[in-house]
Length: 391
Image 1: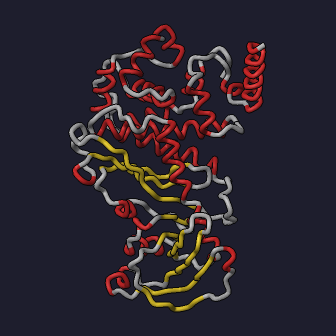
Image 2: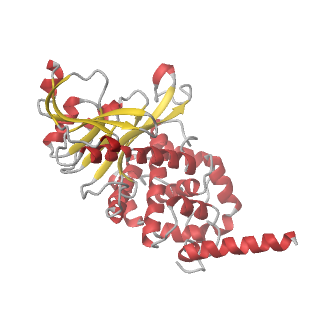
């Protein structure tokens, strides 16, 4: 990472090309490829995400304008946008998904000791939710959503220690959120935070059988009988009820035959009365409420990737192209999180993204570029120059 290399080249060097090529060989990605191989396809798409470009045409235009630098940036060659588009249509999206899963396994342990606000437990804590990207049903005919509209969903299981996704599943807009619980394999002793959409008692019982825990919102139609109630609660904390229940509806009781914990909490800040369901009887009722409050972290994650990566404007219309696009976006996020840890930077992932996005053609060392001291110095120099020009 010396100063003689472009910033983008230094970033690409941190990407494990050997692991990527293993994913390519697994799906014969470079079979009969003449010009644009999978690696060059990936780094061109990665370049587009890092610089927030809106289309494949924009990516090819920018790279063509800097064609004299391509070799030193790490590109084999620049191609026209139609070549890149065909590659997105035909190359197996599993190549990029597998590489994304490799990055998840690489990055998640690096943030395993990060604290969770107002929570003092050692277990893994995950938030499960999905984000919907609205599409034109005329262009994305495969991506059916509600009310005859087009949509694609990205179901995400987010590790709240460091906000690193541990599971990504991409579907059309009609896929119900709770169905993703059939795809996820619960981790023993982990805690899963979910909203009302995931109240599927058969799936929740599988979480219990896997020796894992869940915290979710109870539906208003929940029917139960009280087995035991804790009257020793401090209402000044917002707690109202903490009791052990059993389901009474025959079908629900058959799907979930064990006891549940029901906690009622009044949030004075939002004037909301919340009812939580959990199978965890070891932590306090207030910890259950605080755990669910941290579920908001996944909403922040979705908002971040939509604002700072190219997610809303997709670079292809087929299902294969869309999945490649979204997985490359996730890989970009994971790579930035990896760079933050490797360089031990005090800057946030957002700040690192903004700096890298406008510095790809610089020859500054990224260690120096992402140093908090260097950033503060640059701000001071800018303020000094501005003041001098005003005199």
